[in-house]
Amino acid sequence: MMHQIDPSLNRRKLRLALRRAREQARLSQREAAERVEWSPSKLIRVETGTVGVSVSDLRALLSLYGVTDPERVAGLEQAARGSKGPSWWSGYHEVITPQFAQYLGYEGAADSLHTYHPIVVPGHLQTRAYAEALLSPRHLEENMFRRVVDLRMERQQRMFDDSSRPVSVFVLDEAAVRRQVGGKRVLEEQLRFLLDLGSRPEVSVRVLPFEAGAHYSTLGSFVLLGFPDDDDLLYLEHAAGSMTGGEDMRLLARYQECFQAITDMALDESESANLISRIQQDLGVR
Image 1 (tube, helix red, strand yellow):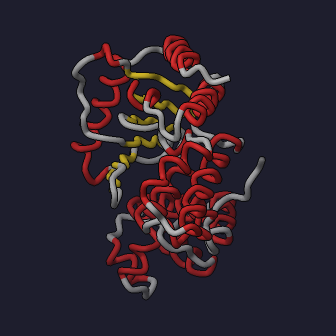
Image 2 (tube, rainbow, N blue to C red):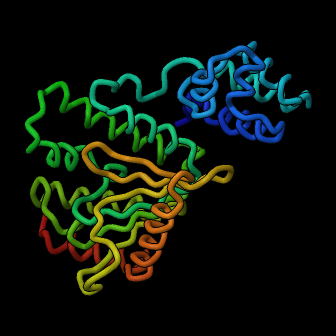
């Protein structure tokens, strides 16, 4: 299933290109804003990708920065035209925080995703029944409950069914694949789905076994996104959610080291699939 390029991806393309062009022109954000008679906050919002940019505003910046290559200018103008409008997740605004919405924009642009989950199967990989069982104890209002589940399912579809899907590595603690969320039948379906996804060439599902003992992370769930043209990004999955990239390289490096250590201790893809299959069979669901 193909999807139209999301406006957030066009805003990201503009953010990277305009920031680099400004730096090559040796201008600060304040200097550039003054030259085109913008407020500094407007330029900052463009360079952080939080707003789109009109073609006329884009041309003013490119002229200031000395960007004249016709092909490059045409590509950025096309991105500017596609930078307006709502992102795919905008319809779920009532159930997502601004921070998570920003993360979804980055996730859609990433070419790699590495994540560790110690407690439950991550949202990227959940079946609908598993997601519903996991959310039930929160006692959400019925419409809100359905919207959260629908958001997870659409996010999953976009991640795994698009032609631009990222290379993904999921490391799950053995506790996550044994915990009977929703009961035996729901877990059995969920484990079957994990085996199916793990068989795809761009997806790696690894299990950190109980036998691994003490390990680097009791830090909770986290996601590392990789980009070919930008700094890696760390997303910490807690109630509010938080992201960091080039502005906190020390914290980013800590989690990159953590993920490498966990991966080194985890079972490989084949061993992980065998363990998941054994757990599935032990459930005795017919």
